[in-house]
Image (cartoon, rainbow, N blue to C red; front, top):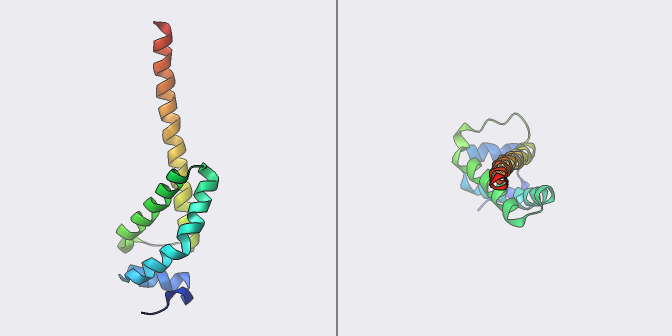
Amino acid sequence: MPDYSKHTETELIRLFVAGNDAAFKEIYLRYDKPLYLYAYHKLGSKEESRDMVQDVFAWLLSNRLELDLKTTLSGYLYRAVLNKIYNLYKHNQVLRKYADEGNQYLDIE
């Protein structure tokens, strides 16, 4: 089995898009922990951080043929995690808004 740890990001992406699962494994091994720590620093939740990172890798794996990077792989992955965090914040704000509106009706009665 070839050693993919010496490959550059560009080489790994090229191999990954071509269907090389070992290249995906190397991408995962290389970026899983740093992305998790990045998400955990922003969220403070181990479970949500793990879910964010897993979602990014799952999306990457299922959309390998459409992958068209305009930046580095690491930049792309960090931005993807950050976008998921922003979406979570937006979702939580909507939930709080509806909960607050519901509480307003409870206070009236």
